[in-house]
Length: 480
Image 1: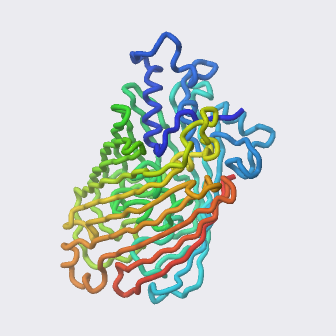
Image 2 (image 1 turned 135 degrees about the horizontal axis):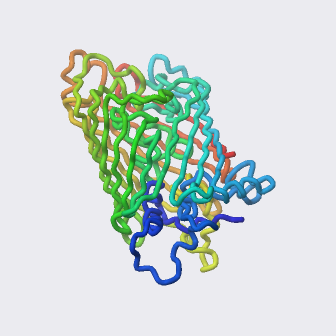
Image 3 (image 1 turned 90 degrees about the horizontal axis):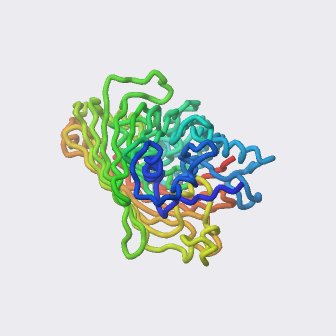
């Protein structure tokens, strides 16, 4: 059985996909609708009459269709004997992927930069259970993620603040480890709301866009895929309660709280402090092309310093920086498509070529075909952070070259501006300064399940003892 993704819209993020399903699920809780007499929920119901999240939004699971031939299917192993399709139809998915990176500093960097290459890998296993398909209740989805890292990634050889290899930060930065990173329940609620409660990786939900969010298929530098200043507010695995309320067709309000000190592998969690955030998320069309803008405001009671930031190189910030509680951050980020392949958004039955671009995975659902720009701008108070301003942006796309519908590329830059207050700390101006980086990648899809990336980075270092560096790298991602 083929599981067509009928609920996707171009450029939609997983967060907004969750929120969009809440409008569908609300009827399960007795909310009034203006629907006609025919059951509008029929397509999303199981045989027992329960409403399924993954029927409403297949992109909520890593893979939603395992069928197809070797060269076009979403996974290497496919659907042997049809057992993965049968499991999916009963609510269970079991998926895995492996990302391998080989990088080297070819010019400049720190005194330890040798020019030789470094290799590391990150294995990730995912399991989801749709509670409706399993015959339990409507609108629920359990998700579990385990990660295992190995190898020796490039670390301080490049001599910069922002890590040049994001995969090295999971599950525990620059350590070979195996950690259960996520175990949560996503549940549709009344009032067009979805809740996510449990252990989560915030990078899967926060600060995302179509062109610069995932280190297994897009940029490698941390500051190109996300805002590194958020590392002062949360880790890569924290206990949280998140909510998404779909207010209108184009406006979703996201909000929630978390434990900022809970570290990966610390299953009991650290409940000494708390963090909260609110994110108004808007989608729109400009010149008949989709766009998105979001405003992020977050606060934490944590007494944070940048030396504890998991999104910076460990130990690079020294001295006695100001440490205060009541830390806050604001960000505006977004994207705008300005070109889309002809017919990519129109089903073949209506004269289009949508199937030429469709891959039934969460990864490709986030990164829809087309060409567009992305941007991020963020600020934290100068009297409590080593770096107070972060800017990034660039150009990205998928399916731009005719006959290559799954290839992706991106080019962009980032700027980390040092806090003026931090510069007054004794000795700091001699050690640290602003950092600027530029990165470009091309992700060549050998098949939809195997992608090979070439990546180049140039960095004007924030560590003054280092020289401007050129970093070359390759990445191979395989989905099983």
